[in-house]
Length: 489
Image 1: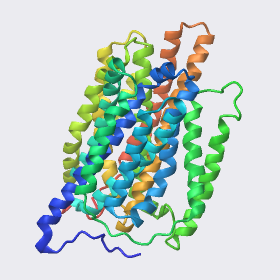
Image 2: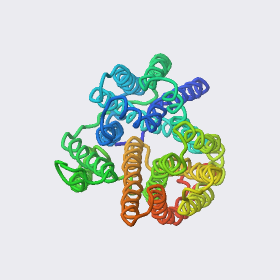
Image 3: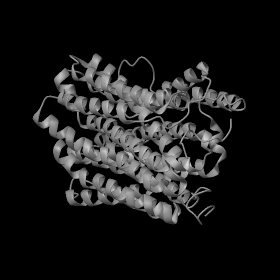
Image 4: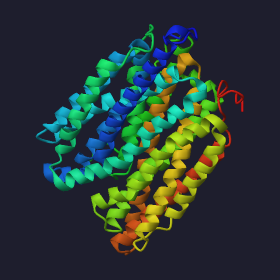
């Protein structure tokens, strides 16, 4: 496997045309990725409404989220293979047409079964889009400009979660739940039509073997971990077919065998996920720091709405509006952070960023039913600034640290670990909250105070974990071949 660059037509006569083409391709991929991420986050406020409208229990309705995460975790590892075998336009069409089909199924679903199936189809398209975007950026953008472009990628990652719950809350307050999908469908179809027509092929497909056993082991490993972690916070269900720890154990065993097989296959350049990306110390440290940040983000995103609605008494739309300024600020800061990365590297951004996240998590250990809404708003804005300083440098440093022929593998591994870390963050925070709340309730504390106590414990553990991210931030470096004069610093 050589380090020959994918086709970018770098001959001087066509340089200007190629630059315009590359910008258009990246812009279309950014817009389409924003659409699929917006859909994912809009659903976060819809579960209670769907339970009431469809007459299903919380454990059944939870599958709308669990099935989505599970599918993402299974499909993302396969994207490394797809990005090598398929060209840019056909893989984009595959991703967006699959997403649009899933959205259409959800929009016409008469009951929970077909709705869950539609969410699974949506997740297949969503899982492909982010690695496709990342790999394309790393292929087309020179190292000295990657921070700026990754800043634009971070807008997608941060703004969609910020406005998704607000839009979802508005739709649910005024329309039937199906309008979440009916409004999303024409946007998805428009993105598909424009992308299919305008996106040009910017990579050269090459032969990549598909090891079926690795695919199965990946599904068992990543799927088992995400399902097991997602189920932990729900508590033991009466009459459950198997104990909650069983999927987690199966997932861990599957992951061990999967890793062993990838190590063997990488010697023949046949791995589904080539783990030689971890030979780069900078990539490894960046990915570990990203995992901690994702645990903090997902855990906070899941707990704050529970806190604001069940402790402070806000409704769904008020909660969405409360979390909106922080998310928008995160998006607005992302391009600036990207430009700063190109100039000063990651460490001077990551250290204050992880410190801000940690400070807010420690402050959230003090929340109760008497905490001011304005204090929560201020805390969310500060943690959003911290995360803005974290995500762009980590994405750029991680993927810039691997060899070009491993870009697709690096993107897929990063996406897979994000999913597992996000599920772990949700499971950890919700499980701690649930266990502590039950204990305080048994001791005679009123329900609202008991829930506040459970949330305090969850944030306390999150705050302790965040300290490791601060330490790791000191060890992330700008990859060799960065901005002129910065290599090795």
